Structure formats: C-alpha cells, structure tokens
Image (cartoon, rainbow, N blue to C red; front, side, top):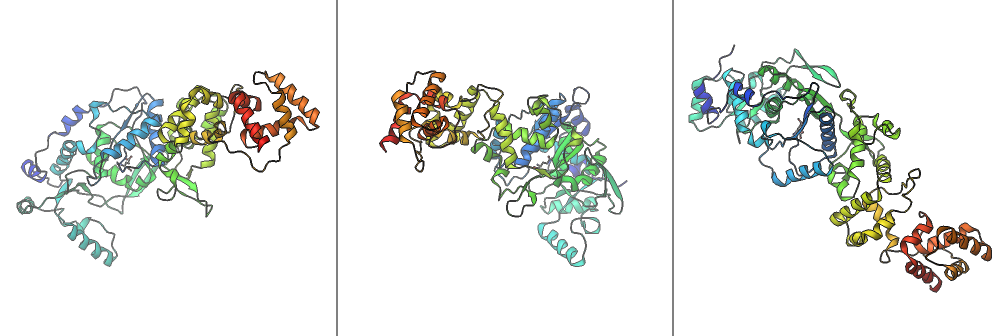
Length: 526
Ligand code: GLU
C-alpha cells in the first residue's frame, strides 16, 4: 500500500489539524433511529437565485418518498461556489418549498445544512484519505493545467489530471514541504487507483446495475481557492454523515456515478441508493420535437412563473407527481386517493427519460383542482394571489370579499357538475371581470332585440325567485315572438358582454337589481 502523509504534514497541507477522526464523526452522526424501510432523502440545490421546475420535481420525489415511508426529508444548501451571492438565492428556494408545501426536516443533529459551514467535516475526511495515501496535495496552477490540457488535446489523449499527467501525485514529503515553504496553497486531489480498461458496477434503483469504465482521474476533492469541497467530495461526506438512504438527482449526474462509487468504496462506506431522474421536457412549438425545458426560452422552466401567473401550486405538484408515478391520475379519477400525498410513489417506476411537462395538460390538472375547491378556499387563494402579484384592478376585484364570494360561488353548489372554466387565479379574475363596472367591456357587435330588453325591464323584479323569473322570460318570448333562449341570450350579452356565461339567474342575483337595470338600460339608450 502507498505511504500516506504524516500527521504534521497533513496539518500543514490543510492549514490546520483535522478536527475529528472518522470514528468521532461516525459517533457524532450515528445511523438514524427510523423504522425499517424509511427513506432519508435530501434536496440539495445550489443557490443560483433560480428554482428550476426540474428541481421542484426532484424535491417532490424526495419529499414524497420520505413522507410515505415515515422517513426524513432534508434541504441541503450546496453553497460551495463562493463566488455566488447566497442569502437571497436561498430565500428563493425556501420560499418555493413553503409555497408548494414541501416540508423538510433539518434535524440539528445531522447539520449544519449549508455546505459552507461543514468545512471541518470535509477536512477531517480528506485528512483520513491523505493519511492512507488515497489523496494528495497538488500544486498545479491554472496555467500548468492549461498547458497539460493543450498537450493532451494535441496528442489526442483524454484531458484531465490522471496517471502520468498528474505531476504531483507522487511528491515526496520533502517536495511537498518545499512547495508549502514557497507559499503555494495546494488543492487536494484523489489518488485514483482506477483503470479505465476495467469496469466498475454501480447501482441505480431504476436502471439496475450499470457497468462503467473505472475512473482514473485524480479529481479535486478540496479546492485550493477556498478550502471548500467539490460537489463529488461533498456528496460523499454529506450523504454518508447525514445518513441519506436515497439520492434522487438529475440524470446529468449519471456519468459521475463510477467516481462516486469509487469514493464510497475507498471510505468503506455503503453508498446510498441512487435514483437518476429524467430531465423535464416539453414539445417544442416550432419543431414539434420533445426537448429539455430551457431556462432561457421557456418561462415555465422557472418555478416563479407558476406563482406569478397564479397557477394552483397543488395542481403543479399533482401533475409533477403524476409524471413521477404514472398511475396516480387513474387512482385519483377513481376516487381511490384525494391528492398526491395519499398516493404511494414506487421508486422503481420513476421514469428514466422522456418526462414531459405539457402546459395544456397542466390546465387539466388545474381545472380539476379548482373545480373541487370550496368557495371559501377559492376566494382565499384568488385574494392572496391578487394582493401579492395582481394588478390594481385585480386588487380592486378582491377588495369586497363578500361580493367576490358571490361571483365565484356561481354554479359551485352541484358536486356532479363541477365548473371547469377556471385555470389560474389570474385567469379566474379575468374570466369574471364583467362583474365589476370598471372592468366590464360591453359587446359592440351584437344585434340586440330591443323589444326583448324593454319588456324585461318592465317586468323585472330583483326579488323574484328563479321560477317566477323564468316564467317572465317565457312570457316575453311569447309576446315578442322569439325563443326563450333568445331572450336569455339578449340579457346575457347585455349583462356580461359575451355569449358564454354560467347560469344567468345567478349572475343577476350576484349583480343585484341596480347593476342589471343599468346595463340593460345602457344598451337601450346606446
Ligand atoms: N447541487 C447539485 C445540483 O444542484 C445536487 C445534485 C444532487 O442532488 O446530488 O445539481
């Protein structure tokens, strides 16, 4: 076995003696006391200030698998890229989690949950690798690496620091000391024993066992610039000591799996079970082809879009849940479950590729969801949205809660015939805008039957019950020689400015006598 560095040299290389031994870390973060089969999962976003729909999808799967197995779901902030501004970016993530109802449980015992605060842990683990000759300090500068890279490219070799190109992998203690005396700060690299001509078998819960060429790159574990870990090394340390049982992450990480498996083996730790999820795709409007959602081109790639446009967050979740567990829609339609939280997601059935998120299909989920809401909940959701994201007109619409409840309560008392014309909170307020004089847009190209309207005003009594009201309509039809439906249509267009509305009697009851008379009078005097 290769000789590692001694204690004093490790302390010099890392700028301080490691704080813990591996045994101490194991004792500090013991295996969790959870029922058999409990999933411990984490959502581990990098704080970029942007929450991608694919991130929400992953977080939902994490949260669901933990929730349905009485496990634990954590939120870990992967803020090892110190060039980025973190505070506001974390707010974006936490806020999205709260609004979409993804509850995490960051038990202090297994924290901290910001990677930037876990340096002592990473340094302690890397010290162990340094002592065992499985990692080494590397003094290559950016210029050195650039030179190596161009030489490799010119010669047709794979680029990277490996084998003979890894200049510092076998420095003697004296050579290391000379570099340090010279004021150079090393990165810590993996001393890879992998041979790409051999295969390493790695496990993915959905894909099963996958063979990869072994990794031979001496990848960076600890960066020289700030002493923080790379993603790979942080993943090893954090998911071990946080006792993560299942790592659910995007398929872009699949190529790193041999490296991660190698790292876990070096530490003799059991790796978590991996589930690499599909990217979230859409059908491109121009080409008609399925492609990845693009942060740049597709507003719906950003979770904030759904909040701003007032999509019911639960409908978005339900749809994402149905992508992860395709049997959910059927179970819900059958009435077997009420929401995705009651449905068991099967890890092995999570799609490996081709997960399609179609805005038209989302509309269906939203209509279903809003259709099943109580009036009080609908009023509350629309009001909250309007006050946060709406225009001044939207705010005006929600100012009188009682009136709004009347407007939104129309045709919601028959559970067998649920209204399906509301999609988002924003569109709901647009849909019912004609109930407010300021927003009402009269129809300009409708040919009214003025006799019908005149007759109506003459006999109209706002206090009439529905039968009396209807009998009057029938009488007007007879007197003016048109069909009952024509009478109703003339009234509908006069009141709403359009030909398609819910129940006319209810509209009049909500508007009240003055508004009804004023709008019909407006047509007659126009
Ligand atoms: N910070 C990584 C990312 O945002 C996390 C991947 C993982 O879940 O391990 O892609």
